[in-house]
Image (cartoon, rainbow, N blue to C red):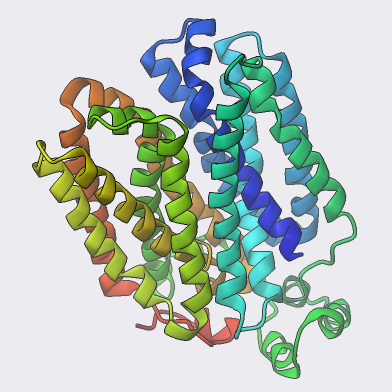
Length: 421
């Protein structure tokens, strides 16, 4: 289960990373404008905006397992269609469809992982999915760069390489069990107990499942007096984490070259490698040091980093590069929590749609960053873009400072019981 869940996140990172090195070739081949290029780069993100809440709702209503298979089947289809793209409109539609599949993956995969993981390991196991995402982005970016040099392969073939990963994951998912907590929430107690006895680690996990209510969840619960702060925190924290990352990582070459630094493979992959280290450190310590330590302080420091880059326009290239690496490390560190909090703070009956809603909000930020950065840099300069990023990170840091809960070591019944600092 860990392998196929992390594989889904690796695939998500791959499709967003592989397109970066071929954007110039795509733009020339299809006669795209800068706005067209930003739209194509963000198409998958807008698809996630649709797929996340839809998949979350379906996962809560019909079960985690069916959606877990359907989203990967959809991805296989959409990924294979990339080999036959013949227009900007078709390219956008295919990438949008891939995003819908990945959105469903977010809203079903993370709840499924949280519902099987023991409390003592839950942070690490769910954090590994983010490690896979960054790894996938780095692998995708590297593959796109290498296949594009020195005698480039067709760009349709390069972005279509994600099909192989999707097929492997679809086959590997055959035979996975349904979530026992979901079965229990639907009153299917005998089935839930049978799966729980086979897969859950301890009697305590079983008892915690049996303490949960049997009832139908409603989307409106996310905005009830009991849960609205958690919905607001998870959604906005996630939004503020991904907006600057997607903007900078997708157009790493362009951003670094504006500061007189060489882009290429070292630029795009270098930032992702540092991010992988940040996630690895967080995964290693999250269940010992707690959630808030990796949520709140990194955001305040990241805000300062963007302020320095934005205000010190004449900074030496080495300093700018160092600050971007610090940003990448810290952003990945608190970004790991975007995979952990949603699966913990929402109750079983709305865990899927709650995760899906937060993912949708976050992808608005990711889509905005990817679409607007090249336009903003072109019109207002990169310093102004960095100051805007500082403002975004500030708002996320403030919300996290006030509302981020500490869920370390708690059962899912306790973490989803309501707001607690």
